[in-house]
Length: 105
Image (cartoon, rainbow, N blue to C red; front, side, top):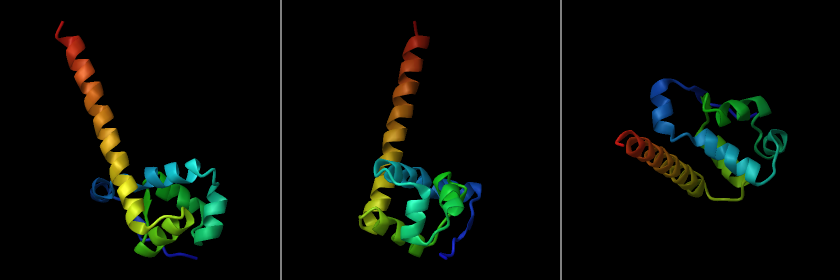
């Protein structure tokens, strides 16, 4: 069984770039279940779920196992996370701009 780092506090959340959401996206894009990923990584399904919901963070070993399960390099996993964060920021910004433009008339 893979050791998981700890429960996530607020400071960790800001540093994680919502990695859990990226892990969930990559898993679902590959039509994989939590159990399938668990079988490939050694991380329990309940723990994977907590990681996907950004309630728990893993170790470098656990992220490496996940990247291997998704058939990508570890660096690509983190790049995907940064891409997701940028897309979310852009969507939030566009929504704010739409909201502001509606309020000016």
